[in-house]
Image (cartoon, rainbow, N blue to C red):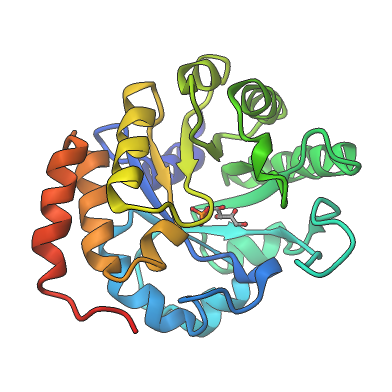
Length: 267
Ligand code: 5RP
């Protein structure tokens, strides 16, 4: 691996081999998502506890200080919305030159395996990898399911992750699922887990993050289950302990319970 690529990967994946990415890119197709209506207010208190932030250029420019040294994974796919015909019909929204101008550590793109736009999204990934490799910029592939959340089983996710890795993604973001080790085993690049819609209890989140890490994930790219929580800073601190300190779900719950006393409840 060339120095630039290796350096950017090291900005994302910490010396312990693990990573906590904070995604705040949801507005690119969901609009002002609950508790991300004013991105700066959501992002600022959480940023110190994330290893990198996953974000679009618009929110990066408007809502993150240029003085920030936090590594950025730039969301560069989009062009669809929740109310449009098909979420899978994405294109590349941001050029590699713009990514370089914004001094990012990686770019991220969704792929929609099994959808009507499977081929387009996979060729978009391939093109992005070609461009990224030219400049030493890693690509994170997001195995997206659109509105079909029930697709999230090991067979489907293993297929999507493997294809993304084969096409050159340096990191793959997918969902936790039962038998998650089958997803990781078939994917020759690091896998991080997203959370999807908010889970009923904090312990439920801690349990799936812990389970996924035991089964080979290097960490998380967890959004709504952090910043839609009533106590988001307590939540990210607890998840950090799972990712970087090998905490158990019970220990994470204890951290959450202690830390939430220090934070005003979200209205
Ligand atoms: C949205 C994304 C998000 O980055 C990803 O889904 C992670 O966020 P969450 O944990 O809220 O699912 O790709 O397009």
